[in-house]
Length: 235
Image (cartoon, rainbow, N blue to C red; front, top):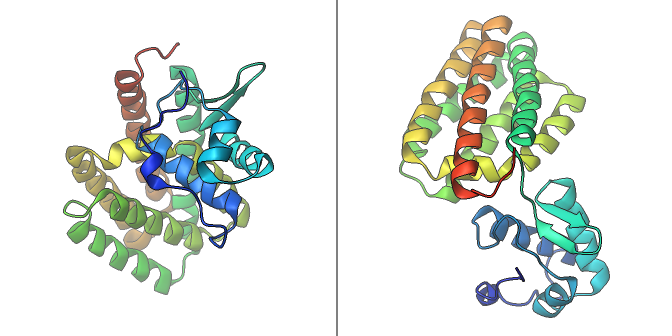
């Protein structure tokens, strides 16, 4: 399938905008996450060059970045397509995420200052008020803020860098979760358990378990939702 023309309204990129590659990445990432571009859909460098008004070099750099996030797959003799994942691949991503976020919770409970613990509690209080009534974009920002504080308190630059990479690779599944009000409501309960264990009790083992439980459920739902939306996915 060739690149869909329905997203033309987003227009060409102004030459004075933020670095062109980053802007192309941002626009394509949005269209993959909101399913304007479907898993398995083929896109062409020539079309992207014409549509965005950028060079082939910029397009290739953007595609390489999206490939590193597992949103694009570069196929020999076919070119780039929107990535299609298997159940096993999704499960593997969430196994890694579960371990990393468990470690983040544990380290936060051990290392975070009282000020950071209070900041996490305050941010979560805002989430309790805003996460359900707000729009999809704000839901994403609020959840990103939660993780930013959790990782700041964990005080492990290597963990932060590694987990950011994993979050980029599971972005499409997190996007699905943010669309479901029932899932969002349950997420608030799971995050409450994390905040209680990590920022109030300061219990490393309980904080790890709360984080792992949150991601274990998220992983199950990710497989179910992706299978529903992408029925051609293989095992």
